[in-house]
Length: 197
Image (cartoon, rainbow, N blue to C red; front, side, top):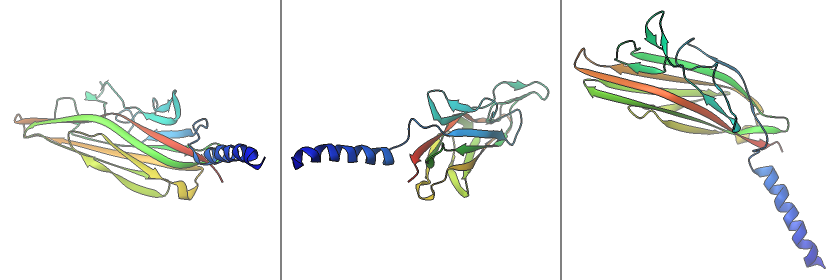
């Protein structure tokens, strides 16, 4: 008789433990107050939005096209090519809020892009971010600007926090003796939620 009851009790305990410790996929974080430091180029806060397939992932989009008033490309790109900026730098900022009864356990930033340099051309980039009260260097990069970093906030049980991400790109070449281009094409921030104890 005792053995017959033991199995259902163990199964119930496993379900409760799983619910308390597994990521809250059904729960949705809120991303708000999205803005950037440099208007009309580089990061594009107007088109930055949660992923429809995963609301806990914020897709950070970039401007594209040309600013015809000053004949400069608006992409997040540093380049020695005509109509480009040799230095591109911007910060995007937003607030993340967990739903009632949950906290932000982990937050991950990922960025993508490409670069090339020929002859005397030189390219370099760097990025850092501030998550709540904590600042981190994301890294420096050359022709492969892809990088990712996860911050574990589990010990702090934060239900909301501001996030700011800064990326800087540089390109240089001596006149007519080389070329360089470094560009960010996309980025995203993913949030993992856990139930408050």
